Image (cartoon, rainbow, N blue to C red; front, side):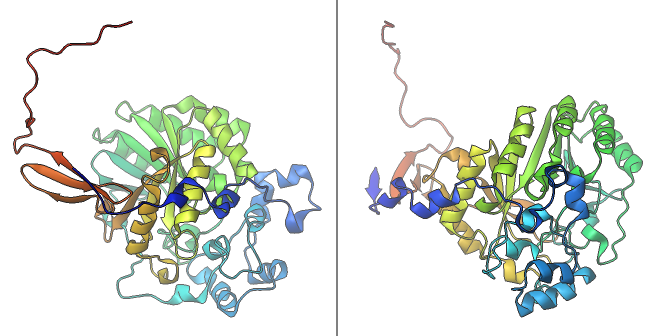
Amino acid sequence: MSNDTSEGNGSDRDEPASLNSLKQFNSAGRGFWSHVSDADWNDWHWQLRNRITTLEQLERFMPTLSPEEHAGTLLANSKLALAITPYFFNLIDPTDENCPIRRQVIPRIEETNTAPWEMSDPCGEDAHSPVPGLVHRYPDRVLFLVTDRCAAYCRYCTRSRLVSNASGYDFHPEFDRQIDYIRRTPAIRDVLLSGGDPLLLSDDKLEYLLKQLRAIPHVEFLRIGSRIPIFLPQRITPALCAMLKKYHPLFMSIHSNHPRELTTEVRDALGRLADAGIPLGNQSVLLRHVNDDVTVMRALMQKLLMCRVKPYYIYQCDLIAGSAHLRASVRKGLEVMEGLRGHTTGYAVPQYVIDAPGGGGKVPVNPDYVLSRNADRVVIRNFEGKIFEYPEAADGTPLVKAPVEIEEPELV
């Protein structure tokens, strides 16, 4: 049975100009740093040394700061440090206070407002930490925190209690204890290196960790979670890729929230990782005035595929203290998912999840495609709103008897 309750949206077949514009690859350029030599600009150490970290620097490069941004930056180092690489700063539109890049990295005074339901540790990581720097929340995998530093600091960071040490968390990983716990726990088959950002470690220090973990027989594969390819593509050197290639199966989850972040520099960096045989996935956070829009999110997902990155998760913004101004609604998230499923290739459709507050783990959230079900049938709808029935017996056996003899067509 099929019941068409919607004429569908013909415009989905003809991509709007705004979508195609968002999918264009552009260079971040040099901006205020046009005088810098190629050698320096392409050196990730130079990028780190020259990050924007103070209000004085920020006002010099962007005199259009709003009063809310000015006040937020004054207080930034009491909660989460300010840091923006010169490369990533060039993506900010100084004329637009709601620039999607600007909202992610420039502090605002709203960060000091904490709602009653917000938390410093919304995912309950500290409660599931058997040794410092290790989170064992799920049965067969662990989160291995290696540093509290990032190339730039996202204002909605789930671990803002920890990263940058602005709030005095005083994080000190104990690599030997972390690795020893993994070695003594045979149920662990999957280790995710995160932080902070693991790719801020030197090649030698990162290789030391990978080598130690790879030597544990029950660890089947390794993952690295990093926003470095987006904030600091210069870090993705041929030497780094050659080192990572030695520790397969090794996966990498990157973090991109807006198609403008996927520049030619980022595309090339991701290409180097893909050429080294590293499967790449992307995690996005649904953010208000950043990507809570079907066209923006569709462009991001399609552009990621063009960079050989599989969209993996869209996260509902965690209930981190001071993030209400950046938090889009779950209703908006479901609307975005409706605009992806069926309207673009399945490879471009990630899983939308809520990390259950307090440490409940990731819970998938989907639009209501199953309308009803009973012992005899399941009633479903597709992306166009058309209704279908799928017959089903209570015990799972087919309702239609199979033919006694199956005749196959003659092969020609």
